[in-house]
Length: 227
Image 1 (spheres, rainbow, N blue to C red):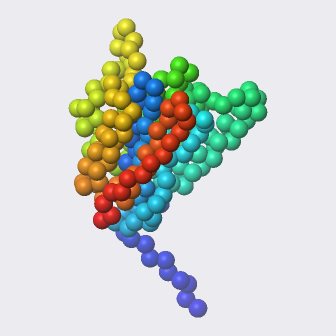
Image 2: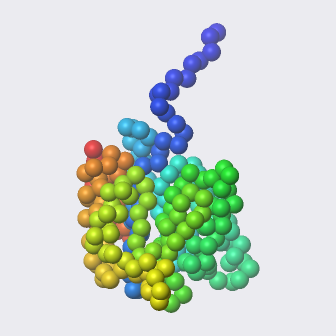
């Protein structure tokens, strides 16, 4: 009996499902993290209802784009380390501490890195919104806003134009938070996703918006175009 031949697309790669868009905006007392729910490979949509957002701690939320198997492995690794931290310290890890843990975890795998591009958002110890943006090997920076994924090149110019957040490297140092109110930030996120969905085939279907503030974590969804 002849062996079964597996035929794959000429340009297929196990790392193809890296589309989608993740956005985070930090305010004076809140943080908004959002991502679309489409997961696709090339021109094929695998699912229209896949969450790219993971809650890592009480006030820390991570949105990730990239190879989803690596993203899941990274999330499980962070969850295990956070559980150990809770047993040792009897408290939840703060968002800046989680940011450092994520950086260390990615850097540890730098020679065979997770194919995951992350943005971490939440509240710091003073109750201010914070956003940390990463590359694949753990280099990170605290910023007022960030975007990752295939639609980030469309989103970042709009955010730059609307927000112009100060750099945390300025002297004297200034808070890396945006001047928007919470409702204005949510409205801006909806606008940039609607725009990105018109021009990026990997972004679409629905947007999951997570708002972190002193009252807890709240979610809402809006529909995007399906084609």
